[in-house]
Image (cartoon, rainbow, N blue to C red; front, side, top):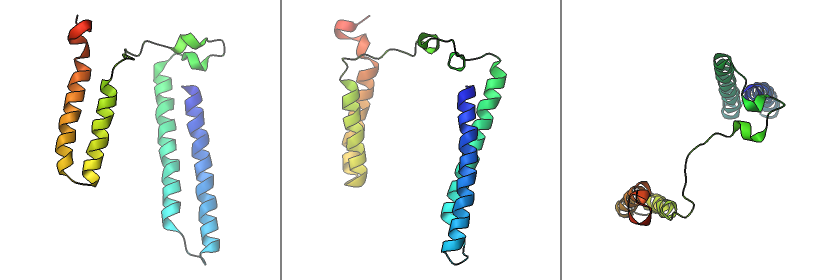
Length: 139
């Protein structure tokens, strides 16, 4: 956590320097006029990274303990908790991705395709959710 906090503080400083350099560069090249879009975008990126760094530092202080990735003597397995289960032989994620792609195609080409894609997405989500409640893998 401490490493992430330090990286975001470094990113904040970099973005402040980049916003300053961009502002000076735009004042020189645009005949004394400020180019607002880039200046505001880079400045807000600096503000966002400062918010993230501040939040991470507060979480790190509230946590009270060091995370495994902050210790130099930690092993890789120390920070590897059980995240969840994913069945590697399942076809439902592919069907769900196809339904999502068809949904985006329907938004771009014709809205009537969205109704077919919505049905396909619904079937894929239900199939993926209840995959272990029927057939060979039923419990």
